[in-house]
Image (cartoon, rainbow, N blue to C red; front, side):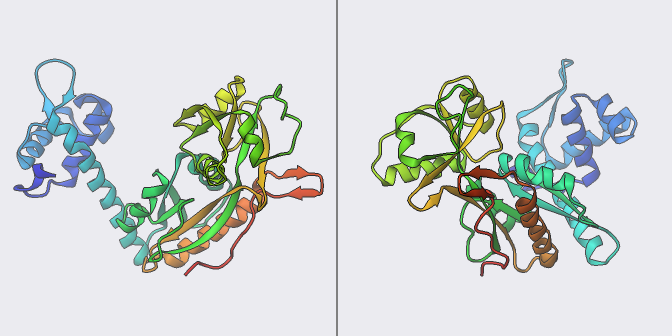
Length: 319
């Protein structure tokens, strides 16, 4: 941020040109994208560089590259443009002349498996949803900073935010077709100590391993990966049992995990600022999402009947 300290704030139009150049890789491609002549874009970039007091682009005759200052300034420019877009949306919505766009902060898995299908299948009228990827432990920070209107995460919500429990998803043990568990509907927590486990940073993994640790049970982690889909791919190749709460892929068989308390699940909370200008709209949308999960998520059979994986629902906000 120091490159702005002693200068006036750049014109938003200049920021758009700079971001367009960075994204497209050339001034000519950026000019086409913003529908302005190439000489004009070049001149405006020079003005931007004088405004911030640093060269943002390498001009040595080679391929277009950002300078160190340019790389430092790019996320700042994106953030300023994003906040300007949000400010316009808020102003137009509050004066009743525009629809509303809500930004949801969530993990990639939640976005892919829950939020994106909900957006595709649900008509929210004048409300549009966008999503940004955030780790569970920092998603609430996006709400308090104004970067997002709503956070959806498995982490318990802070008391200063309005929130409620949207649903609970089962933690599943994914196995390939040839695995001894491929014909089973459920396994006990203790049985996980007998097989190589494939884990990830997913909440389902943390919840299961935490319960094993509390019981003093030893277990073998054969692979620990960052991306849940990779964990499933490894399970499909016979490298072990993937412990996740994601949707099944690669023709894997999902096996529910149980302990003395019943089904091992992961909660998903929705949280937002109580003073948000559209708090009632946010709550309405999250209740729609709650119903969507209940109605659309696949069910798992067990001997005594059919069990929906979305359990423990609350209809009212948690205060």
